Length: 262
Image 1: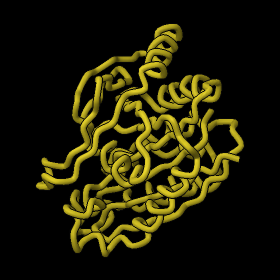
Image 2: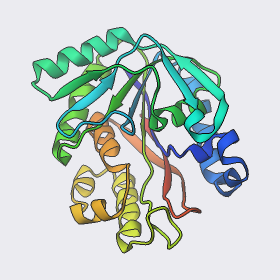
Image 3: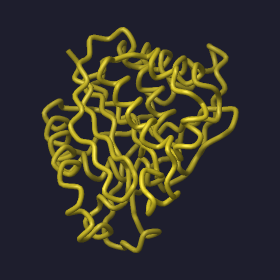
Image 4: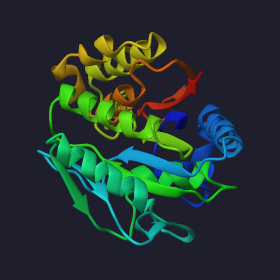
C-alpha cells in the first residue's frame, strides 16, 4: 500500500558539505525536509520509489535502474565523504516490469550502481534514520498524458502491494526566476512556479495538464514530468497536499510538498 507521497527539490546545495553557508538561505526547505524525514520514519516504510531522471532518461521510454546495490555519493560536486548505499526491491521491480510489458508501455531497464543526484539528494536527506529498499524510476520525453498514464499503472501495483511504499518525486521548478539565475531571467519562470503550486493546492490534474507547453519549455524546469507521474499515482486517492516550503534565493524554485495519505 502507499503510505507516503511527497515532492521535493533535489539541488545538491541541500547537502551540508556542498551547500555550506548557502544552505542558510533555504531555512524553510531544510525544515520541511526534516519534517518529511520524521514523517517517513514513523510510517515504517519497506520501499521507497524515487521518480527523477537526471542520469537515465529516454525520449520514448520510461526507465528503471536495476542493480544489486546502489551507491549514493556526491563526488561530482566535490563532496568525497557523504555516502550511503541502498538495496533494490527486486520483487516490486519485477512486478513493475511485468505490468508495463503487459500494458505495452514503453519501458526500459538500465543498470547503474550510482544514483543520479535527482534521487540521491532526497534519499540522503529523508532516510537519515531508516534504510528501506528502493526502486529508482526515470521519466521520459513522452507527452504529458503518457506520464499521467504511467503513474496510473504504477498506482495499481502499489496500492495492491502488501508492502509499505513511499513515493518521492523530485525536481526543481523554474531555473530562470531572476536575472542572476542559472538560466537567466525569463518571464515564464514565475508563471510556471505559480501554476504548479495552484494545481497542487487544488489537487487538479487538469490544471497541471493545461500548463502551456511554451511556459514549461521556457521555464527551464525539471519538475513537471515527475509531478505528472506523481499525480497519476495519487489520482482518485484520498490525499491532502500540504505545501511545506517554497523558496527561490538563487533564482531557482525549490518546492517541498507532503501529499498526506488520508
